[in-house]
Length: 309
Length: 132
Image 1: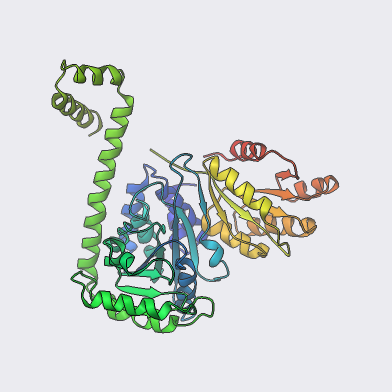
Image 2: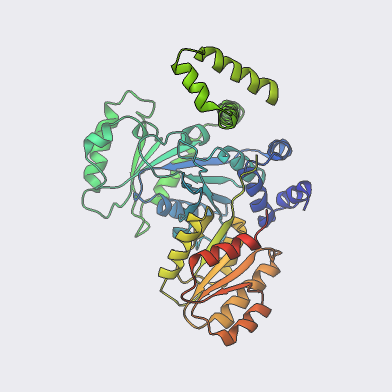
């Protein structure tokens, strides 16, 4: 099927076409630019909520309850659940959906991060815009639950939510730099566990003396097993989402634009390097003092620019 | 440079609580470079087809040990068709007697794998039937 036809069907609300457009963009197709050019004008704002946190804290279960709460208010909700691809085989087991599958009217899409760093895939921004064009009002993004450096989500989301649970680390963990510095909201999930209150106190204590941008972060308790605390959590969303849509969208695009340029250049550099014949001999020449290493690099970069751009 | 991966939904329909086989297949397909989505136990054909469409998978690989294959598998194929998604390959694995193969194949199931099948056979079947 021709791309234009799929996009028209997608904008008419056909889910299978939406899924196919996401596949095209996600797989880095050369058609991506053209497709996005057609899609951007249809975007008129969605609330993007990024969910991050360590594995096992309950990110998927929290999203399930939030998506259900909002979807029950007759709002259109989508979930992007990102899991890691293997660096060795490129394969992935995408298992977040298992906790959300009975959400009837919610669009759920599992995405492999295609080995990009930062907890989200490099096409996530485009996929968000595609969902926005399809009139989804709330888009939840579940990042790869790796750990302390998964902070890119804050560049994409209007609200960033950090999910923690008691028993995953002591207060020294909480004071480490990285993930703890990004939440607009910090959720202590598994509130049914005895140490939940203690974790909440420690977090509040830490935030009180924090100099970071999230010093005003709000702390909530939720209990996914019994479905408690989610209404209260959803009620605080409007106070966090900034109203100045235009500036916000330009700032988001700027970050993504820069990143896409970086990715493109890195790919070109790797391709050039991997296709260089006699690379071992050249390295030997450098080690023997027969070639100037900086001159070689400059020459390679000139080659990349003249052949690709 | 297109980097399109084969996407497979591993599905367990009906009242069947054993997913060891499904998980082994999921891992084998992952190790063969595919993106594998597992939806969990006791799903209805409607839930499975809904997930397959939302996820734009190339294959729905159904694992079934309950004996209800003659009822559930054609239902999945038909629902895919009704939703314009009959380009998705449907395969089945589990305890399925040979006498039922013909009925299933006539109803949209394109590969049937019984206990003892080497996982490489499943991988090869999917790779040879999915074109990008």
